[in-house]
Amino acid sequence: MKKVLKVIGIIAAIAAAAAAIYVIIQKIKAKNAPQGYDEDNYVSCSCLDEDFVSETVAE
Image (cartoon, rainbow, N blue to C red):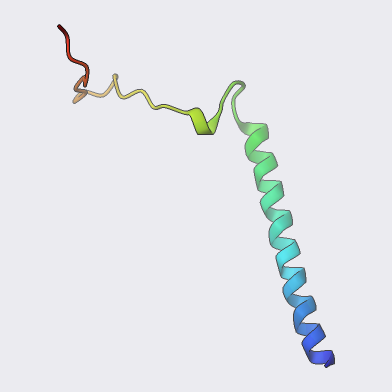
């Protein structure tokens, strides 16, 4: 029974370490992001590309 508890403890420790690393990375990303930057609403501007083709139709 002690071996099972040790294995569960090791798995829990690894999961906790992974969660802590994830939180740290997210905080660093948020700290380094430019002001007003929202990753979910980011739209790249391809109008500066040489092969840009507009999808709008002029009437």
